[in-house]
Length: 262
Image 1 (tube, rainbow, N blue to C red):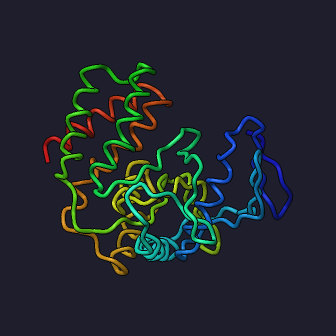
Image 2: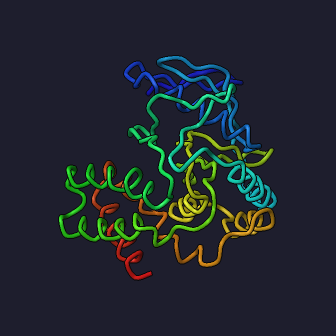
């Protein structure tokens, strides 16, 4: 990928990108922004590029973290059409192309229950890629599959409707500016709000406790959400195990084992 632009713009360009890659990013940012999320502005996009507002980094502050928590809760509360549902455009039409997390394709198959969706569409496909890459052993894979069995059976389902989630909310996609947090590079879809929070916890986020406090001021989390963090970390760990080495395979196995103990 080639990065260019001016003092006011930031252009990402990749002539080999999938035809849907930048359209998915632009649609996801618009959809999250519609829910009052603080997303980077999209100035234009095409088959091989996306042009964004240029952001200037600033030091993370507790006040910005608290505001971020409240706006994240509002974004989640805006909802989605189903678990796994893709973002929609300005006319309310669901994005029909391929979704991505990072550079990896991601399903937009919709399920009625969260557990069935999460196991089938967000963990197992990336587990298979990790096995092929040699970063997860057969024994470890069996543990992950057992955890997915519990998830698919609805052991961690609740009465909450689908949330509008960023989907790739690690700290690198939380950009701190003088005006506050700005979200970039989403893998936006309908999911469970705890998944975004679990990813923040997995890869670290400045002032995370303050973010959570702000979040719960706006929208309290369900009891036991901290204990369920390993459930929601299976997806990002499987994605990373598929492409970023053996250490993520062992972390994925550890998280799956923790799920089986719940």
